[in-house]
Length: 174
Image (cartoon, rainbow, N blue to C red; front, side):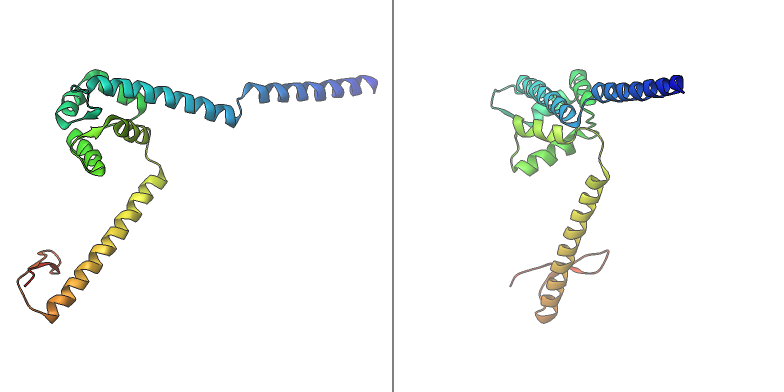
């Protein structure tokens, strides 16, 4: 009976020791988040330094001409691959970023921010967010077309009607 108790006590102590060791071996969430932030900060610094080298005129912005030359560079593709960013159509990508900035030239800090946000795979939330925004825009366009159709019926004037749905798209102001 004493031998059995000693073995049971040793098993309990071993279990506690192993559990404590396992907790210490796996970093806590705070440490993981801190490590991820440090890695992201290092990547942003690398990216900014790289973008500064690409900025031929030293303006702090990237033009389409500068970006199109760089987009073909294997070093750039390698850096983007490490980040998990895949740009299939460089023209559309640059246009998207420059239009959101409302300028033809893109500030290198904004470009770095956009690239960091594109890092990794799209989540289900990202896809649903885009679908929702598209739905809202579609509703607004439909409301505008309905409003224009109502005005067309009250005052006939030259108009442009959608060939697919037959709804009024544009009416000349008289």
